[in-house]
Amino acid sequence: MRKPILLKAPLKDYLWGGTLLKEEYGKESDLAIVAESWELSAHKDGLSVIASGEYTGKTLDEYIAAEGREVIGTNCKDNEGFPILVKLIDAAQSLSVQVHPDNEYARIHEGEPGKTEMWYIVDCKEGAKLLYGFKKNVSKEEFVSRIKDNTLLEITNDVPVKKGDVFFIEAGTLHAIGEGILIAEVQQSSNSTYRIYDFGRVGADGKPRELHIDKAVDVTKLEPPTRDTKPFGKPEKKEDATVTLLAECDYFTTEDVKLDGKVSFVADETSFNGILCLDGEAVLEANGEKLTLKKGMSAFVPAGTGEYTLNGKADLLRTRI
Image 1 (cartoon, rainbow, N blue to C red):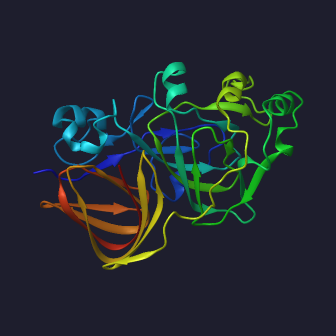
Image 2 (cartoon, helix red, strand yellow):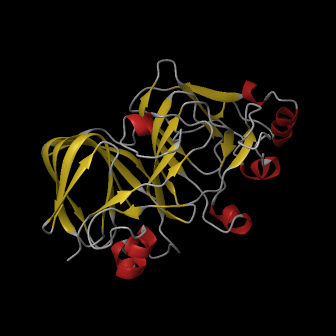
């Protein structure tokens, strides 16, 4: 009988990060800054660690190897590894202007899947904004020219953000998270990023960070975004929760669950469920196992667990395939 497990996230100290994940989301680390926590990850660059049950201390990929791929579900049968990566991102400074490749390009050039992702704005400072595609259709010649003469930001699309906004970033979409934004990101399990512009910053070695202009030119969609910055669905009442479909695509389905009481879901044989607590506290219960999820904590509910309940007052993200 399968049971849910708690996860401990690997942490990343990229130079643009801040301290919110340590101060408000319970991330314990000797790192001065924590830019990202990889909440649900079996990617080689950052493996979630099991924090409850008999597999405590093992990585998520070790757990899957021991229990069999049935725990991730039949919808994942075509994936070579674990299909998604869920993060919390604290942008104390703006990230580089960047783009991610699609599956075909990434497999040829990077040896891994491409990267389509979704951003859910958990919190942000007043006046915060991010870069999302272009203001207009752009030719490849103009794109290359503006990269070379440092005028790229004149044609990119800046979008003011507010808490609760949703950005669906298909592979090939130019983007950059702006200063003062805290994001929950759900993405394909890929770490392939092509930087185009980095505000002249230098890394820990004192040298400018690497840019990937040629690859970026190959994969960037030279057009304005086609999707609004709203959730895909409208809020719907389910027991003591309000559930909103944030994004749905071939790679993941993610909902926001605002809970005040008790709600039940099912993790059937088709897919695992990933639960990330953004605020408050809830008890996750299934097959005799009870796990307490506080702000900044994550749980993995294996495929085939069946019905599970969440009880408490919390804001949660639920992701499945």
